[in-house]
Amino acid sequence: MGAKFMNFAATATLLFGASLVHAVPYSPSLHTGTALVLIDIQNDFINGSLNNPRAPAILPRVYKLLDDHEWPFIVASQDWHPKGHVSFASAHPGSQPGGSVQVQFVETPLKTENQSLYADHCVPGTWGAQLETGIQSRLWDLEGYRAPVHYIKKAQDHSVDSYSAFADNQYHRFTTLNSELSLHSISTIVITGLITSACVRGTSIDGIKLGYEVILIEDATESISAEDKAKAITELKGWGVQVKNLTDWEAENESDSN
Ligand SMILES: *[C@@H]1O[C@H](CO)[C@@H](O)[C@H](O)[C@H]1NC(C)=O
Ligand SMILES: *[C@@H]1O[C@H](CO)[C@@H](O)[C@H](O)[C@H]1NC(C)=O
Ligand SMILES: *[C@@H]1O[C@H](CO)[C@@H](O)[C@H](O)[C@H]1NC(C)=O
Ligand SMILES: *[C@@H]1O[C@H](CO)[C@@H](O)[C@H](O)[C@H]1NC(C)=O
Image 1 (tube, helix red, strand yellow):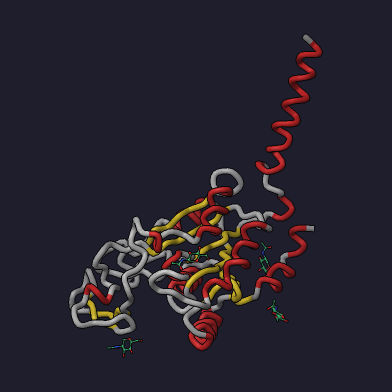
Image 2: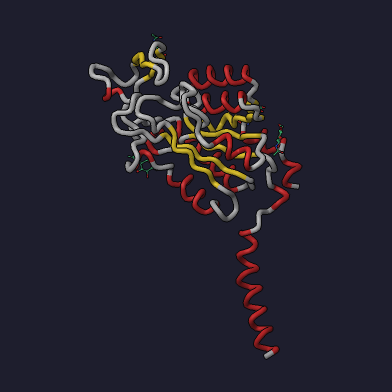
C-alpha cells in the first residue's frame, strides 16, 4: 500500500510538477496592472487585401512580448466588417480604394464625417480576417491558462467605422474593452499592432482619454510608410503616449524580471 502510494506520489510529482512549471505564471516577470494590447494583427493588414510590406517586421517583436513576458491581461482586437461595410470602396459606386466619402452620423444625420475607403477587408469567415498564425497560436497557448485573453471584434456596425478598440469613430457605441480593463485592475496599456496612423492611433488616444498610462512600442507597430508612421507618432506623443522601442522598454522594466 505504502509503496503503491509512493509510486503514485512520485508519478504525480513528475506529471503535475512538469505542467505546473508552465501553469503558474513566473511572477517575478509579471507586469502587474499592465495589459498587452495587440491591434488588428490580421492577415489582410499583412499580406492580404491591404497587403503592407512594412507589416511583417513587427511580428518578431510582438512574439517576444508574448513569449518572454507575463501579462495579467492580453487584448487582441480584430477588424470585423460585414459585407458592404461603409469603409469598403466597393460599397460606394464610382469610388476607389484610397479615396474618401462623406457619411452621415448614425444618430445625428445633420453631421457628416470623412470616411476613408479601402479594398474589402477583414470579413468574418475569410482568411484575411484571421489573426496572423504566429500570433493566434501563441494566444491559444496562453488563454485561460497563463493569461486571460480578451478578443475585441470591432467595426461590426454596417454604417460606422471603428479605428479604436474602445469605441467607434463617432463615439456612438463603446466596446467592452474599458470595462474589461477595469475589471482586471489595469492602469497601463502597452500597445502594438497595425496600423500606426489608424487603429493604433485611435486606440492610443482613447486610452489616454480614458485615463490609462499608454506605452506604444514603436518597433512593434507599422504603417503604410515611414512618413505616415512618424507623423502619427509625433501626434501621439502630443497626447501623452509614451513611445519606446522594445529594447528600451524591456531595459526600463528589467527590475521586474530580476
Ligand atoms: C515599465 O517602465 C515604465 C517607465 O518607462 C513604467 O512607466 C511602467 O510602469 C513599467 N512597467 C512595469 C510593468 O513595470
Ligand atoms: C502570407 O504570409 C504567410 C507567412 O508569413 C504565408 O504563409 C502565406 O502564404 C502568405 N499568404 C499570401 C496570400 O501571400
Ligand atoms: C477626407 O480625407 C481625405 C484623406 O485624408 C482628404 O484627402 C479629403 O480632402 C478629405 N475630405 C474632406 C471633405 O474633408
Ligand atoms: C532604441 O532606442 C534607443 C534610443 O532611445 C536607441 O539608442 C536604440 O538603438 C534603439 N534600439 C533599437 C533596437 O532600435
